[in-house]
Amino acid sequence: MHNRWHLSLAANIIHSGGIIAYPTEAVYGLGCDPLNPEAVQHLLELKNRPTHKGFILIAADFVQLRPYVGHLSQTILQRIKKSWPGHTTWLLPANPDVPFWIRGDHSTVAVRVTEHPLAAALCRAADCALISTSANITGHTAARSALEVRRKFRGSIDYFLHGKTGHQKTSSEIRDSASDNIIRP
Image (spheres, rainbow, N blue to C red):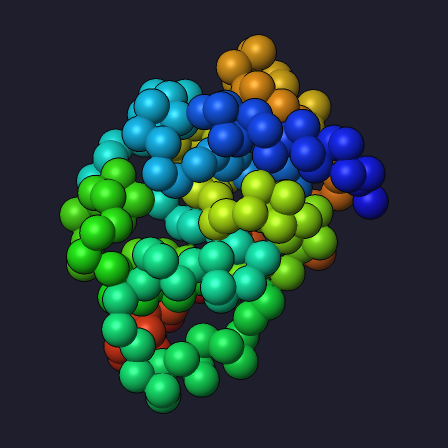
C-alpha cells in the first residue's frame, strides 16, 4: 500500500487542478477534481471525450457522493448500498447543482463507492469524490498498468499512483437506480 506521503502529494495535485492515474477494480483510471472545470476540460481533451457523455464519480464512501445526488427513496438507497463498496456504478438522480460536465446530457449522475483499496485511499486523502474514467483515448482499449498509461498519454498525466488493478475483467457494471436495469454489463 502507498504511504501517506504519496497519497498526500496526489491529493495536493488533484486540488491544484492536476490529473492523476491510479488503479481501479479492472483498469487504470484517470481522475481529477470534479468541481474544477479547467481540470475536467483538460481530461476531456486528453481522452478526446465529448462533454455530453458525462463522467463517473468514485468515492471512498457514500458521504463523499451525497452532494452530487438528488433525493433517493429508501428502497433505492438500500439497493445501492447493498452493492457498495463494489464494482457497480449507479445512475442516480443528480442534485440540480451538479455541473453539466459531470452529468453530461443526463438528469442522472453516475456514481460508485469503489472497492479498490488504493482508489478509495486516494478519495480519502483528497477528502472528496473524484471523476474517474478509464485511462484511454475514447474508443481505444483502457490501460491496465501505469506503463501503458505513460505510453498512451506521453507525459500528459500529472501524477501516478502505482499499484495493481483489481481482479475484475471488465469496467464497472452500470445500473439505472430507478428501474434497476443494467445499462452496461
